[in-house]
Amino acid sequence: MNCIPKFLIIIAMLISSCAKPQEAKTLVQKVNEFEQILTESTLNEWNGDDEHWRFEDGILIGETTPEKILIENSFFIWEKELVRDFELQLEYRISARGNSGINYRSQKVDGKNYVLRGYQADIDGENEYSGQLYEERGRSFLAKRGQVTHIGEENHVKEIGNVGGDNELLSAIENKEGWNKYHLIIKGNTFIHMINGRVMSITFDEGKSSKQEGLLGFQIHLGPPMRVEFRNVLFKRLTP
Image (cartoon, rainbow, N blue to C red; front, side, top):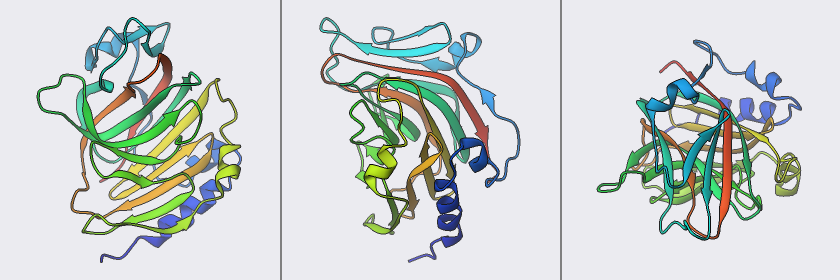
């Protein structure tokens, strides 16, 4: 097994103790400024099913209704480039029965225009899963909320630490149906998920199924009528 970059665990522990998101940002080296990638003028760089996705007043809205129920998960996909090492900051809001996520380093499913498989930072209205790392159409749960995990070459997931208890982390998601802030730090084989300035999960993926690049997109899940919203989507490329 390759050596786990334990210094990143220490950094993440420090981040998890910060009360404010801006304090966490100083612990990660930046190479350029954040850019807002989801605006009226950049919509041509995105692709999604207009039956379930729309952009209004600076907000991306994914919504299903009794008349427009999904039979499989639908994604709103950034097609400008493949993402590798990056930071992403955004605000999200989700209905009580909503199920969603932020996909990254993902791939399109053959024969389907708006379906992705790959890494997903989870979001849900009941906050059962929010903050964890899930692999859509892949290896399933890679890190649950609170876990620090290592994935070995044979794709075995092992918990090697934690960033706090579930009740403690859940309390950081202050607005159950209001706006919350997601922050992803993705570099090499290390994935850090933060909500409202608290680290929710960390994953070191050295498995043979790991991916180094892919598409970025937002999900709305099949199921009951639901609504999810995203705004102020800020993206920054990091050094290789």
